[in-house]
Length: 72
Image 1 (tube, helix red, strand yellow):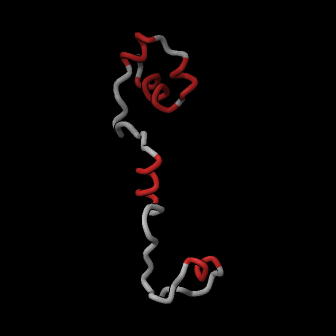
Image 2 (image 1 turned 90 degrees about the vertical axis):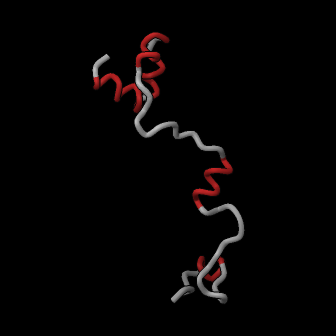
């Protein structure tokens, strides 16, 4: 399998879906590794898990949405 085919197999799901089981077995693992996160891991990584933290005691989420200057 050429380098171009390997990269295409990594990037293009429809191309990868058309490969035989033998061809898929010859595709090396992606250098970035597995990028499959659970919903909880995504929430944690995005900062949506837990209580929102601010740098100013008077700053609230509603103030942020009203575009007022909340943090110095």
